[in-house]
Image 1 (tube, rainbow, N blue to C red):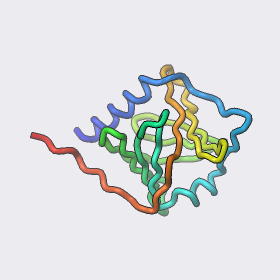
Image 2: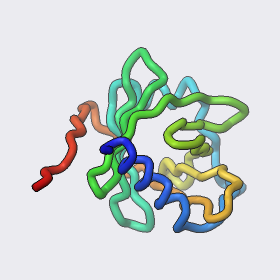
Image 3: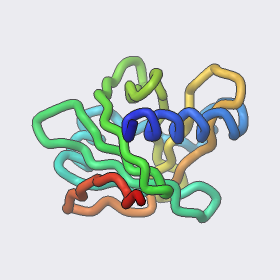
Image 4: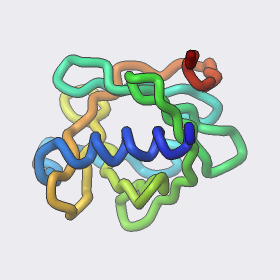
Length: 138
C-alpha cells in the first residue's frame, strides 16, 4: 500500500502542473559524469517556486535513487542518462534535463504528457542519506 501511495503522489504531482519546458539559451547542460560526481552517495534537495518539493538520495555504485516528496511519501527508482536526458523510472519514466543557469542547478522536465511538470531548483546537495519510513497510522 505504501508503494501505491508513493506512485499516486508522484502521478498527482505530474498531473497538476504545466506543460514540458525547453532549456533556454543561457542554460549549460550538466554532463552525466559531472552529475554522478555531484550526487553519488548524496542527497539533493529540490524546490519549485521557492517551496520545498522533495529530496532524492543517489545510491553509490548504483543507478538508483530514493525520492521523498515534501508530503513524506517515498519511492525508489532506477535512473538512466541518454541524449542529454536523465530519466527516472517510478510509475512511469520521468525525464529531465539538468542544467546550470545563472550559477544555479535547474532541473527541466522533458515529459511530453499533458500536464507536464515544473522546473525544479537544486537548493542544496548534502553528503548525508535519509531513511524513508511510512507515517504513523491509527
